[in-house]
Amino acid sequence: MPAPFSSLSDFRAVLQALPRSDAQAEAAARDRNGQLTKPPGALGRLEDLAIWYAGWRGTGRPVLERPQVIVFAGNHGVTARGVSAFPAEVTVQMVANFRAGGAAINQLAKAFGATMAVHELELDRPTADFTTAPAMSEAELVAALAVGWQAVDPDADLLVVGEMGIGNTTPAAAIACALFGGQPGEWTGRGTGVDDAGLALKTQVVAEGLALHPDRDPLEVLRCLGGREIAAMAGAIARAHQARIPVILDGFICTAAAAVLALAAEGALDHCVAGHASAEAAHRTLLSKLGKAPLLELGLRLGEGSGAALAIGVLKGAVACHSGMATFAEAGVSDG
Ligand SMILES: Cc1cc2ncn([C@H]3O[C@H](COP(=O)(O)O)[C@@H](O)[C@H]3O)c2cc1C
Ligand SMILES: O=C(O)c1cccnc1
View 1 (cartoon, rainbow, N blue to C red):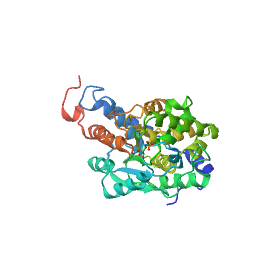
View 2: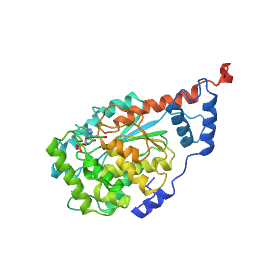
View 3: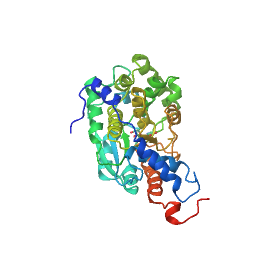
View 4: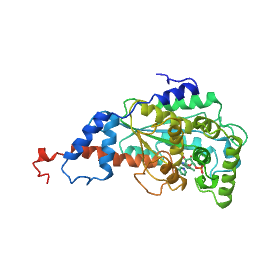
């Protein structure tokens, strides 16, 4: 099925029409949670997670059996400015590695029972260097959003989106700064591991991009400062919302993509939880701007969907307890 938009204004309309969580299913799940054989609240955040998941899946007793991981790859013109510790060729090389099963995300998707799809977005045609021109035209942005939209398996019951794109912590920082304000230095980190001089240059590059592209409309920010894999993640997150598929957000780049949606349409990320807090320092700031508390904190700074994939285990645990535990009445346990 083609994406239900062929222009940016169509996409804006899609975002305004996204569904809400099913309040009845959520209430049924809350009621069931109160009857399970444990002291009230003893499963901590797992209880809230299960109730949230139930609302999006539209049943008080949901299952989580078909998680999908999608990795989007894109190349960035801004790498010409020397913003990454690695060369841009690594993007296409890593795509081959994903296809061969050799990357971290392959192992994590397998470990947590998720299918994994890889979509490369015109790797031989990097986006424009945003310090000289908008990263993408409107047509290019819409095409990338559509790749993301169409990559989502409508039969999945959980989505993780990840990315591969050498240089992409730079557009992520620029997007975050454009959306939430503050100084470029507060949003710019070391990514793959640039040294102090590299970090200073990267911060300068982010500042130049923000100065050249003053429009703060969220989708214009994505077009001017983003990248194809970042736009594809946004498209996939929006599609998941439309299909009531809950999403676990990954690291800084994924969260920057999601933040565009959050500012474009109220409630656009209600179907998302934060899988982890990455070691890229600004990720924590970005999550707090979005009101999302990370499930895990493991010092990861990889991307690819890796932290979110790990959090599939947490969510599976929450749903298994919620839907599989006995109630006090069923087990003949006194409920105090
Ligand atoms: C071998 C390798 C595998 C990766 N997997 C994810 N990234 C991560 O690092 C990149 C972002 O960092 P920066 O902005 O500093 O380039 C992205 O590709 C991200 O997915 C990788 C980076 C490398 C080198
Ligand atoms: O937060 C992330 O996902 C991240 C951080 C550094 C490099 N790549 C990804």
